[in-house]
Amino acid sequence: DTGVSQDPRHKITKRGQNVTFRCDPISEHNRLYWYRQTLGQGPEFLTYFQNEAQLEKSRLLSDRFSAERPKGSFSTLEIQRTEQGDSAMYLCASSPGRTGEKLFFGSGTQLSVL
Amino acid sequence: AQKVTQAQTEISVVEKEDVTLDCVYETRDTTYYLFWYKQPPSGELVFLIRRNSFDEQNEISGRYSWNFQKSTSSFNFTITASQVVDSAVYFCALSEAGNYGQNFVFGPGTRLSVLP
Image 1: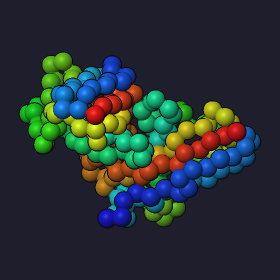
Image 2: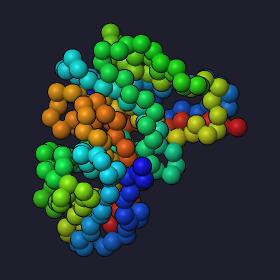
Image 3: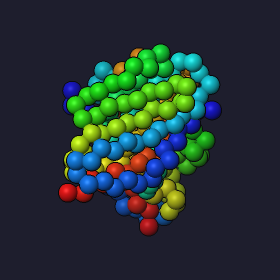
Image 4: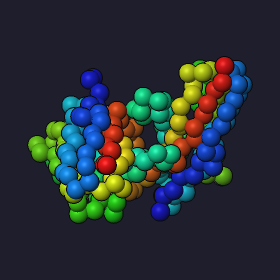
């Protein structure tokens, strides 16, 4: 069990640039989640995959955000035309897929948009 | 809609004191799951406990204990004899079994500072 890994740990970008984050879940986990966390707040749900299918998206996920999980393995979260309000910690989590299972979180990617 | 409230934004205690972190939740489902996570300064959320809605037994794990009361929709967390290493942000979370996708809803968190 190597845990959930996210890359990069930190990303600094200029407003208007595109950024992409990667998440590698625990290998046997079917479900993969993306969350966003801003300072002083709890994680907010962005989107969820069961295998390669993106089954739910939060209204927080504007058209500038897109997530993929090709082949049901790793996932990427892309933000186009970044805005300063996108600055946050982006957390990835995975779970085995059984009802009520806990989420295993990665260390997150801290995004700063200048 | 599901909701989690953690009314205490920040708590400071002196080492060895007991401290209770409050969590109140809202759900329309009869089957749901409650969780506590710890987020130390390193940033990674660490799972502490899961409780399903049909199990109201309180649980103790070392210095940690949890009090689940459906009648008041609360799931409080107590640390006995707190230690400096307990300093972190603690999140309560709710997951509804009937919610397709099973997205978790987290509370805003309580920042606990344990002073030596």
